[in-house]
Amino acid sequence: GWNLNWNCEGIPATDAKIAVIGMGLIGQALVKQVRAVAPNTNIMYHVPAIFRDVDVEQEYKLNYFSDIKQMAAECDILVPMCPLNKHTKHIVSREVLAMLKPSASLLNIARGGVVDTDALVEALENRSIKCAVLDTTFPEPLPKDHKLWTLDNCYIFPHFATNTVAVRKALVEDIQSIVEEFYGLGHSDKKLRQFEKELRYDLAVAHRLTAKYNMDMLVWNHISARFKNGCLVTPGRMLWSQIRPRDLVFSSSNVTADIIHDAIYAAHRDIGAIIHLHTPAALAVSCLQEGFVPLTQDAAYFYKKVATYEWDGVSDDNSEGPKITAAVQSLPGCNVLLMQNHGFVCLGKTIREVWVLAYYFERCCEVQLRVMQTGAKISIPSEQVMAKAAEASYLPDFAPGVCEWDALCEEIGTMEVREQETNMLRMRRNEFSFVTNF
Image 1 (cartoon, rainbow, N blue to C red):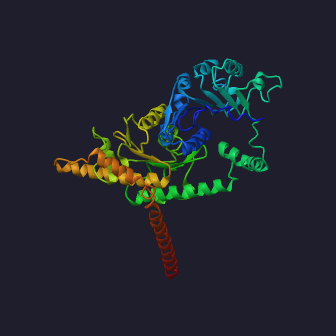
Image 2: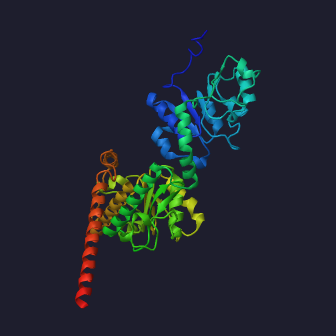
């Protein structure tokens, strides 16, 4: 029968130190569920340094370990959540298992091959770890005479969570759109087509707003939104007041746009939109040694969120990409990259967010310059006041773009109606002129 005492000395999730190998979408989903029931438990994770995501660390309160053995030595539960490839095969090695405490457990819900099975059998037989809970094994299925079946501290599950009609149906129906999205082959998914339509509309509005508020520079600078495996971006060689949804492209005719935007998207996977401008006030502030100084309530959006990048000349060399990526990653949670003697970039999750941030950043830079022009002693708000204002600025009801964007879209829509009416009047006048001249 069932032994109800098998884990009576186990550690509650609220007290356990949980170590996760990998932090992709599935790993993040797991952490989110753990945080729901154990908001203060110690969760640590390991990925190669190049895949480290400081924004995810902040969101889920994670501790990063570059050394997987050191992480194993400190945890109570080791949870592989990584794909199986040549780099992760036997990532839970004999050496890693040896670092686990005798009270620690292994929970493998990744692939069987990420664990060295022979080393695991030894660790369980020697009781050098408490137990192993395996949703997957290697080989799979296990031979009937495999040692893992005989160990009383090894719990093997059948690995068939997808074996339902609903899940299998979803897998079949979703696979085409997933393949097409990954390889950029088509638009069979209605949701994807609608998403692209909305992105194109918002991008077109953002370009026209930039021209309307005199923040553009003829055909130069660029705005983009992440889409599929790349981004929709400013076409180049068009005045921004003329850009329509169908004009956005997947690769700009401006090589600088591709280099800057690709580098910034590579910094964090949750960056969904980017705007790069050379507006006068922000450009002037980028030339100051002290850089941007938040002085007002509006500047609270940017308190401790402005990263800097030393100008490296015109961004036409792909080798500059990693430097830009590193600059963005150097300040967790940054929403502005101030490029010295060059201009600035606003980055965020949506087009509306980055455009509104760009508008306010230019305004704040203009205020900073005007204050400096007075020559008077400047009153700089305390860190406590600015921190409080910054927190209030990002409340859900007041975050950048939440209150402003619909009204801005309506204004652009009104402009388009006026343009159409003006064009119709011009055509009628031309027709009348032709008749009278005839």
